[in-house]
Length: 428
Ligand code: GDP
Image 1 (cartoon, protein in one colour):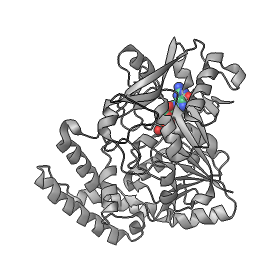
Image 2 (tube, protein in one colour):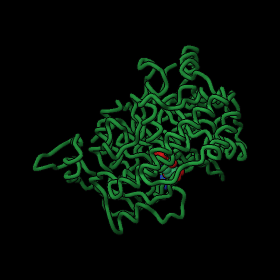
Image 3 (tube, helix red, strand yellow):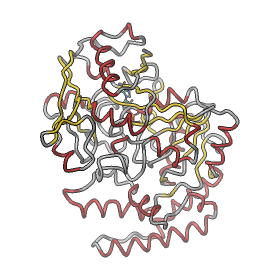
Image 4 (tube, protein in one colour):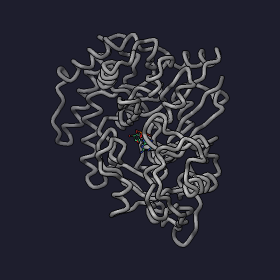
């Protein structure tokens, strides 16, 4: 049976965690293909709120094998902490259920220190990274000097490689006036983590292709979103990996003919964390209204960083672009409940840049920064929609909004979510 790829259609935080949780129920394997613990998925199961940064949300389904793919960068200490946290919440985490690619790259204390040094040096031009060492780890990967998870199998040699990397980073840190890392203390937790993680490490490309041949259903779970992709996003305000559907293939080592479904996830409005262009950004009361009060965990404050997210109207230009880059076979629209009570709703249907009308985002940053959104206005709805489970439970205006979004990006929408709980999904 073929694979499904799940991708964020905007700037991340689209609600992929809950959609992955839904799709995982029908999967045998759930594999993450890019990014590291800069991502944050939230899954609500009854009274329990699981915040997952590295481990795929498939771990919450007992029959599912979870894979951390070769395209990821993994902080072994944080991974172990996350494993211990969910184990305390009653989830069975063992090498049968969680597998780490020997080819995945590791985030070390050197990468974390270099990340904050680099952001400080950029000052007002800072990317707004999550300061988790993701960028420097990918830099070392492409610079062919990274440390891979497989190296943890020989703990002693791993310790030496780690030590050498930290000493090298200390030279760079000193050149820029930052205090050095003490390699001895910084490596203690890493060596302990390596010893415990050894049984979880294997060649996951071999595992995945073997399972696919046996007929297993594989869900490839994306992190971040299309507009944060290092190639297709708003460069340089992007992450260092490929969260788009192409990244799933390289990030897991499977071929394109294995994939028969690409599910995009989009929030019913726009949010963005960190710097970078956002043509539909709102300020003032409406932005605050979309952002929420911060009292609910699903309000618009970053799962990983706690930073308030920038909020704006839905941008169909972005969705149309995401549909093209990823080849979506369907789109899931989340957080429709948040729009209840807004008199009228705007959707960006195009951009105007230097007097030209565009249907797709321009590919240079300068043009993108000058882009002015062209809006269409639709009637809002007053009713709460959290109880809806079928299309007929939704107000006509909600259905019209969903249909218009599908039409604007030319992708069918068959499922929407109306609240954070597992069952708050509407099948249209
Ligand atoms: P991800 O980064 O795309 O995985 O985003 P998350 O899965 O962490 O989702 C962001 C937040 O939105 C989480 O707190 C979810 O529980 C919440 N959420 C997801 N879908 C809905 C929805 O339909 N309505 C509301 N109100 N919250 C939702």
